[in-house]
Length: 520
Image (cartoon, rainbow, N blue to C red):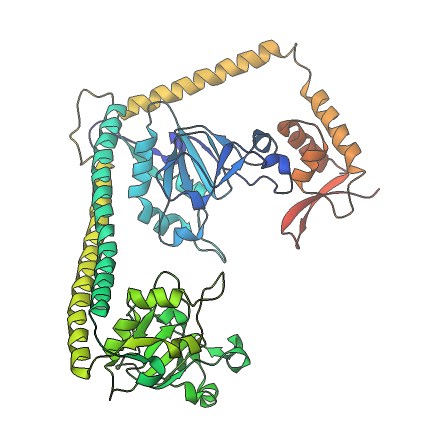
């Protein structure tokens, strides 16, 4: 692509200092008890500004483990997580944080704005996943070194600032619209509940139990009659709890048994028009009709209660609607048992009573509710379409902003190439200054070999008391009072000796590297 005036091309790796993280040992309570430093992992990357985390660690954990302290205003990027199958989380920390091994952090150089880099990574997210994503056996990851070498279009600092201001305004507006669209689903659900409650409250009729209005009621096979080992990739459908929605049959979640197994369970065969009722009652009653257009035979599973209505006395649609009403929910909620998975029994459902007017009135009420529910479904569908358009609009706005098409270029801006040259010059001057300081202070400093040797001796002496199976690095660090860098240098020295007395081995049970003393 042709860069706008004043822009220059660099690499993602040259934007600043990249660093990774790690997980402090959970065995060391000093690393976690009363922690004050947010320890960010992928589960915290659900927002674009990070000021807290689910877990906190201590300063001792930072100095004594593989994690690092990331200064505020850095760009955080998830590089290893299952979420990379569909999205690339990017955020900016507004307080100092530590990160785990699944994240990378960029602290940009002066003149390179974190929000601009963050927006650019968001805009490039799909492309990054396509070009640098790597599928793993358990989680996906990013080939980070390749990503760091990829090209990055950098505008002048003043233009970065204007782009960020523009994108902040536009994305904030889109977020408000998205919030309003999300409310439509809540309002549609409230509309359905109000219609059901009103229809139920206005009924004036004698009550009839579920048993009296049904030809039969039955549960699915349970226990040894249908085990996990009985399921196969294809065959006869088994309708499970996840297929029962609130007045909606969820067909895309599929489970099967073999034809041979089905022959032993035919008494559980479902028929079109059967009413499926979930025994688990949580936020609302989940009940729906088994669809007439269902392809092939199917059975219900345990806790998927089935009511086969007697169409001579009741309209199946009417009964389904009344079972979904708030009044039924209140009655069932009072009957539930089980603290973690609140459920009712089949006998309680059989004994539940509904007001049952004549068939003509039932059909009229069901027709009216059909109209209300169709309107609510249409509202939700339109909101979903609008949200999809909003997502595409946001992606387009980010792309335009990060390639120079959102605001005009100012010819008076300092070109980004000059910015990079100045950064490189400053870095060279800092390196030269550091070399001079080391040279001037060399006579005053204790030789590195002496310090390392002292640390080496402490480590070697302690290794004589290690257990045969060895210790993890974090466990060694808690035994020896040495700064992290000194301990690490001493360990590398011992491991690199011509006849080493310490070695690293991989423990298959814990799936971790262990340090072992080599027997004399």
